[in-house]
Image 1 (tube, rainbow, N blue to C red):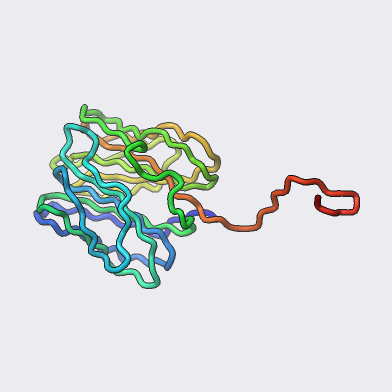
Image 2 (cartoon, rainbow, N blue to C red):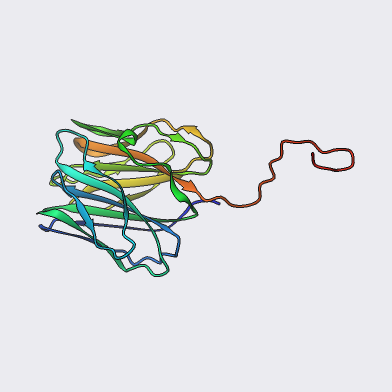
Length: 236
């Protein structure tokens, strides 16, 4: 069963405070996977989930790995219920300026969710200013997995945009003003190493780049058989 995207949303804020919220206006069906990418100015932020009895599952929350940057980011997901709220909300542990949230909604995802789980080994970053951000290679284990590439730049004052993403990624989602974050996806038709993925920044800056993948749900009949067919038509 192929993974398909049914909707996206992105919001940014320059207002001081600890409340983080996105009102999405999407139709989200039961069983869909909702991915949330959160980034906030300043390091050592944590994000309390305010989304009821079925909160988002935190996969990774850390300071951006570029030593010269000053931002915290998180990757989280939620399995949608029968009735999803019109907005998703978090609270940061400290009031600060400038944050961004992206959500991407997918159907056809396996119950295990991840083929390649976001982790410190699937991302890199550089505090040396440059105009090319490079996500490390990952190894796809399941045919039809949906690769996702996420780029974050600590360009809170001078906003950075992205272009020229490589490795077949498309479906760009950027949030506009006040925070510099972009995500992309593509389907991998075969297993194995993907190679690195680049994106071009609109101006020289530090950056963080992540590459990970959703696992497709199983579907259809399995006609694979390693035996032989006898003269009478018996499967052996």
